[in-house]
Length: 180
Length: 190
Image 1 (cartoon, chains in turn purple, blue):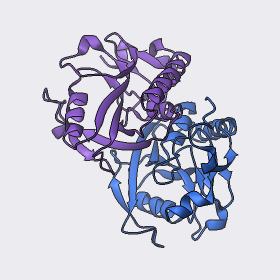
Image 2: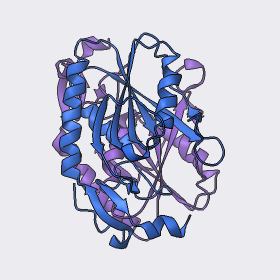
Image 3: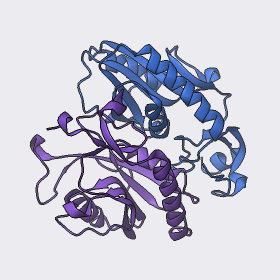
């Protein structure tokens, strides 16, 4: 069982679902008179997105972007990533809401926000399920945060380790012997 | 899930075809079946077809009790409308090589069958160990080409459905249920 690889549950399924309902309410109130253009970054954000969007009370569009680091190396300090699949629609003049699973150093999200800003949206905001503030290397504005978490090796609810554990319905801390 | 009937003017929706609880129950059954069938398999790759399948995929995979990887494929048609060959443009191919892997394609809906048929043929050229399809909705009346569906959620009549991943002009996609759209909605903009 996948669960056997988990040292502890950091955020339970129930906590996640409760928090997402709250975020959904908040976003629905903030965008009550607008149709947000939601941008999700694959693959990690797809589970969060699937649940969050079902809680939104106004019409909205969902678009995906896929990115990767250049040359298989770690993401550089500039945060510049290669866009594998760009948005299928233009965000020009739209109210963009970027949905992320986790913000760590902040460099990738910072780059994505700057990249989207160059496309002349009416507004850009960011929503993340998890944030690790102690890991931050660059300040990045987060408008909606699910949970602030300590700097631990987390998996589940979209987050993977070597492509495993994405499907766990909760956020868990991986046993150190599995990645050390 | 909350009742989101207030999301759109209820004038848009003719009726709820499959409610959230019924979907959830059926997805649960499908996940149990997939988990049992692939129990001995050490490398299952679940492939979601974007955008339509992402909600079904998120719910299905969370209920799988077996280890698996997920990957996505994004398609768009060449030019206007679907062609009878089913050949579509791959906007984003799989990240991983599926050679030797057991592959499960996850689709929101099978209509004419052309797209799924093309995807199955395309992915089988990559020499997977096995290739199966898992589909939430099927409209058998619309079928133009025979296509194998290994796991099917619901057979539905030939009406315009939205919700749970299915859209009309990028709207209604994230309704937590499957609904029939009012004809005037898609006729007025057609």
